[in-house]
Length: 494
Image 1 (tube, helix red, strand yellow):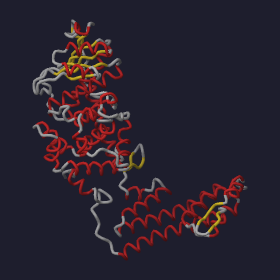
Image 2 (cartoon, rainbow, N blue to C red; image 1 turned 30 degrees about the vertical axis):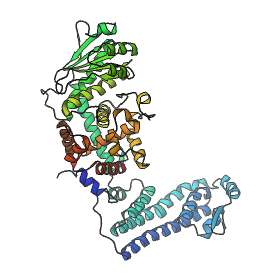
Image 3 (cartoon, rainbow, N blue to C red; image 1 turned 90 degrees about the vertical axis):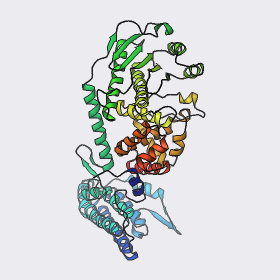
Image 4 (cartoon, one colour; image 1 turned 180 degrees about the vertical axis):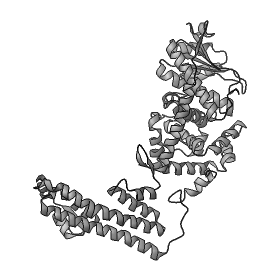
């Protein structure tokens, strides 16, 4: 069966539970009867709790019973005996606790602590198990009456009493994971996708080869005033003044990224992605980087001035021809591999799908998507946001927090609309916008892979984002944005 497309997701987002069809409108009598079942369950819970807590007071474990008296009061705040037991005074329409008297009561210990185990056993048999059964029945009645939100609330009550209750877990669509126990189905699917992607990366890594040092100095040695070593691995060349370990590890990371790109986007092993070689000029200091920028004949004076305010710059190349050159300044291995993989992805997406910096969200978003998927990090940007943005920019979080920030931003209604994000220039992007770009592309490429591939194919034909998305999914930007938000709400950004 073909997966539900983005258009289908948008339609389903209007339902309370995305995976379920909208129920027929319930009759007023059915709604009233179902709610009566739930109300009766709560009233019986309060009775059971009071009976158990009163027995606890009698047998010498009043401090242990306090929590159940509190629960009974929350369920039935009008019961006079419960209010008296908890030192709660009724003043007009309000109930106010006598905190001084209650504090004195709480200082006393259980006179017979040896009875606590018996209390716990009776609580399980006389309160927890009957309550679970009652709220299961209430949930079933509410779902049958077309009240899924209220049914979910009853299931939450069941899980508060018994977090492993299989009936409630299955009713909510949760999946039993061998290592983590019950987890939401969407999260289990995400874990499976992550594990699959990790297995692909490990397989590619195991099949890798070592970068090799090429005899002689790099052609930019004279411009930077320092000998640059040259390293090669397949179609990638690295010119650098870094030590051998850093150079080899960096170029091998780039090669791994290129092989992942081929596997992920269906490029045949023998088919070239870049027409010619990709050359990364990696320099260890800002001074050497500035000299390389000054000496690069492919840069105009205006681009040179701009590049010196950055830490990397791709040299403009003719479409479909190259050469493909990036100048980078990174002082250590920790950031060198991340930066080189980031810019290698720019070259690959530009060569394969014609994605350029003119569409900043896609240019940066695809690089972030690939780098995080490969290295679980994202520390490189094409601009220094805090210095070059038109307005003060908010930095993106560490990679492990991107999903959480996505969910938090959407939940607060603070994410930029997709129409605005797609129209922003590269220099207008801030951290939250980049996180949304990453999340939307992850949603498109992983949750709706066929449509994601169709979108990239449309980009390869030269369409801009709005037209490419419409051609691939049948959705306008506003509708695709709504489908993405529904997905974020259902998966908490994971």
